[in-house]
Every structure is written in C-alpha cells, then in structure tokens.
Length: 281
Image (cartoon, rainbow, N blue to C red; front, side, top):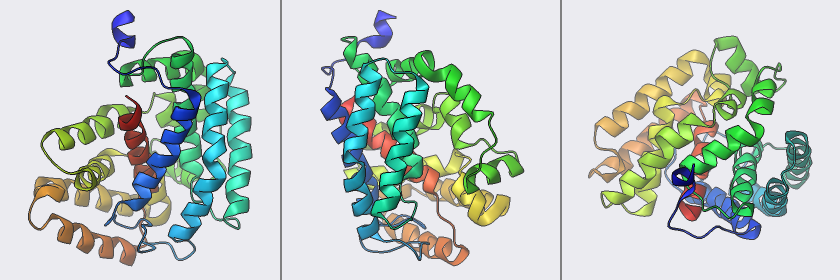
C-alpha cells in the first residue's frame, strides 16, 4: 500500500484542493473550440447559457469544493457528502436562474475533492492510483448502492433506457474513464510537446471516443452518441489538435454538433477532472 500512496508532490490542503477544482472548471470553459460545448466565445449547442452563466456558477461553487474537501478530511459518510452536493446544486441553480451548468461536476469533482483531502488528512501524497483507491475504500459501497437507484435526471434516465453506463455507475467503478483514459491522455499529450490548450482538446476527444456520455444520449439518442464517439476517434486518428488542420477540423465538427444539438457534457466534466488531477498530482 505504501507504494500506492507515494508521490513526489506534497499533500495539498483542503483550500488548495478546492481551489484546484474551481480552476479546473475554468480550464474546461476556456478551451476552444469544443464541439457543442459552451466556451468563452460561443454557446455551442446551448441556447439557454453562455460563458457568463458558467462564471456565475463557478463563483457560486467555490466554497462547495473546499467544504466537501473538509468533509473528506473528517472521514464523513457518503450521506454527508451527498447533502453537501445537493446544497451546492441549489446554490448553482440560484446563481444561474435555474440553468444546469455544473450538476455533473458537482458530483464528480466533489467526490474527487473529498477523496484527495482524505488522503492528505492521513499525511499521504496524492497520486491517481491512491486517489482512486481511497474513493473506492471510503465510499465505494455507497456509490454502488446509489448507482442502483432509479434516476430522475434526464441523462440518467437516457442511460438506463439505452443500456449505457451512467454517471453514477462511472463513480461506483472509480471513474474508469478519468483514470484509465483522460488523465493518461492529458499527460501523454503534454509529454509529446503539445501546448496546454491542444493537449486538453485531444484529451476531450479521447474521452468522447470511449465515454457513455449521458448528455449526448439524452440529446441525440444512441445515434447521437455513436456519431460523437466515431467523430472523436476519426479526429484523433487524423492527428488530433497537433496536426496542421486540427483546429479547423474541430471547428467543423463543432458546427455539426450544433446542427445536431449534441453536447458532450459528461466528457467536459471528465476533462475538468483530468485538469484538476494535473494541478494536484
């Protein structure tokens, strides 16, 4: 176990963990082009929100990520984390006039912040392997039970109807797309010399290629999800963001996503989580 918990970086504080979550969500928002997603300069496939909506949401959630990190450090049960997340969602909706900007991120990044602070409270340093182990050890059973509850949210209902892996199921499995695809893809892109923005864009497409994104399933059904996954694979096979026409290809794909009203919100949340990991681990 000591080998799992070893790292070169010092253990971060709850304030650092929470701040990294807010900054990671801004990393995701600032990335452009992103097919179907809100950026600082366009609405993507969303008529009801823009960058200002997302910034109001981010400001409303800043204290949440620190608070849930504190709960993780204190060894709080899952029920306490869930109540904290529900309260954060209410603050988000109040700040955005009822628009869901970050519900998925509240769930995913909240759990990750709690797991990271649980590690730090024990004096351990943060690594992806240790973080995933802690999540499963502390709250895995509760997350498995939660994943078995019927969802009342559009994405969760679409995932159930189509036989896809829901966001709750991803959490119960220890976020495999984050730890097995997104985080390695982001580090590999940076290691081969890509700048931060194109590295994040390639990571987004790597996530889209494999994730059962319930946002895509809700908006476009299985056809929309399959289209997005195939398009992401084709983008990466053609060289991705690092090739001479990579950004043009991403913009063209974005126009097609808007035409189809597709938005890979689950992939966006997973990208933000990978950016958070990179800031801390």
